[in-house]
Amino acid sequence: MATATVWKNVAVAMQSALAAAKTITEITKASPGVVTSTAHGFSNGDYVFLSVSGMYQLNDKVVRVANQAANTFELEGVDTTLFETFSSGTAEKITFGSSVTTATNITSSGGKFDFIDATTIHGNSKSQIPGLPEATTFAMDHIWDVSDAGLLSLKTASDNQSKRAFKFTFGPGGKIMTFSGYVGAALLPGGSAQQLVTTPSVITMNGTPTYYAS
Image (cartoon, rainbow, N blue to C red; front, side, top):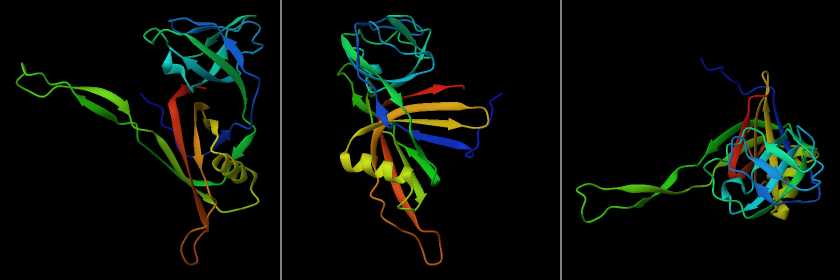
């Protein structure tokens, strides 16, 4: 039976820094995938941002390090068995130093596939195959507070049009979702008479999210 999760006690953390990029020389097709990176210096439990060519399914993905050794580590919970073949890439350790604590609601959307018509002249019915999925977004309304550090971090990311890694931790239970994306946040105030002054933000995801039970 599924364990229900409620939108309360949710910690939203955003990347505040990335460490120096470590070169990846190999990623296996396995469950989980194993990364070779000489003297990477990562520890178990670290979160890293991947920039990958060839094995495109991992590009822009935020993953957790497991079973690290001097020159290798596992991509915890990521099955790469059916992914494309790796050609090159880097991994950067993420510091989640910005906390977003002002959101009053959140809405997710997108992810639907555009389908490509593959109907032949020999068939008697339409045939289609999935193309690219549309971008996934998280739209939030926030309490408007221009002195709040988290809101100011969102605005900085938006102004710089820079990609950021995010980590949502759902409590109790500690389920985790990680992903990367671009932020839109102008901190413009809005609302109705005698109601809370709010400001919107939107995160447009790059790649796909990673989930952890705890």
